[in-house]
Length: 169
Image (cartoon, rainbow, N blue to C red; front, side, top):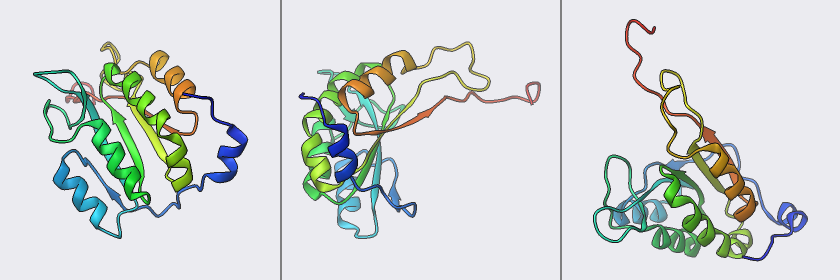
């Protein structure tokens, strides 16, 4: 993708108002249709995983599910065609990053023209009671890819939590 002019982006991109009405876990064709049909929904959140079994393609699915009737490309195309909803993409695996961010970067001109804001989310640091577990999307991979491919997007960084037992309380 060609570089994005940051000054032009900042002047053309509207920022979402603080009062958003979200549709969470929008990981199926039916739920996406409901979100796009509801005039009160201003932002759509969905999780991104690689499909399994079969050909490995990025899909919209909430773990532990590994199947969906909605792949990443279809999701992006439908939300951009609607043109009025913001998106939060929650990356659950590092393997999904580059293909999804490249596709998102290719669609940046339309997103910017529509005024659609995109949040890119991932658990990039080990969290409480999970300090010795590797994170599924390491910060050293997530941050440079986001900055290089999607500088127009906002970042939402987090960490996974493991259950805390009585002895850890």
